[in-house]
Image (cartoon, rainbow, N blue to C red; front, side, top):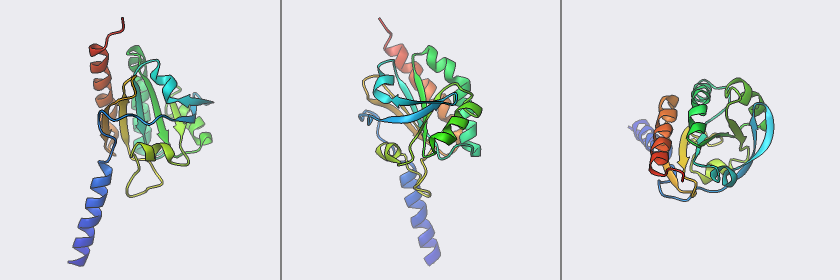
Length: 180
């Protein structure tokens, strides 16, 4: 019985933390970070990206792992559509910038940037820490309006719906906020 109780408590802790994310309507924490696009390093600024339109910010546990590679490929395939809608895509993980320089070329296919968060300050500010491995980010996606308001958050270690879900939110936002 003791193992069952411990297993239940661990499951509840993981489930509760896995679903933790900043709520819709909350203000997105601003950040700047070293990032790479196509193997080139630059400083990514959320505030600057939001001046151009909505931002799809997605957290992933680690570069070059199976699920994160699948998700990067899917975001790479969708990047031109996100750009056509005026949205910026940025991925964030705890990986070093040197690792992300390679990942941005091979798995992100030089289509969108990935930012380094080795101190975990960004993932913590977005409640995107993986409960079972707190040194890693959870697989959490956000859509942030140009005003800095979080329009949508989604957490699931299965990468299959992150792109479709965020694309749907960006499309809806753009249709409701046409540029003059």
